[in-house]
Image (cartoon, rainbow, N blue to C red; front, side, top):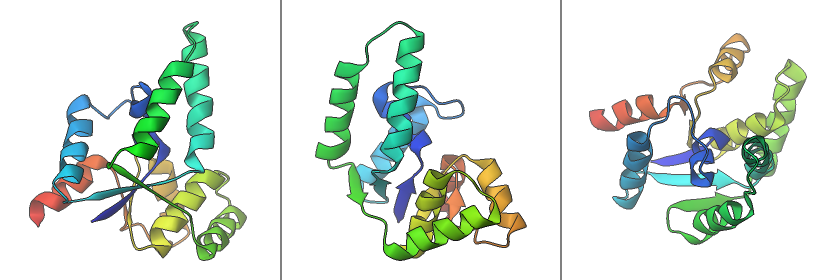
Length: 156
């Protein structure tokens, strides 16, 4: 199963805790990847959002995140856990259509559209995105959070 990660699922690599995502959940995703049950995909556009959040979070604590960022980026790009992909042209077109419909988060639009075009699961905890998709009669069956993903995999 091919799974495209929302930024939320990448933040823990930078040492940023995410509400609703436990260490056990992260380890389970990693184990599923190592077993070959799922493949985790990322799009580099989400790093724009992530690096801003990492800077803000560490600066709030008076800490320099430079070393953490360096180690995290190496883990993201050099490990066998994540595969980085470039969104196809059609994904950008769909993302633009979503913006015209009123969804202003272009990073989420690009990630969702990439998952749709590439026939992937989009792993996201963004309930407002799902609500927007429903209101606009866009596909929602491929947008799941980790809990729903685990349930889906247990049924197989």
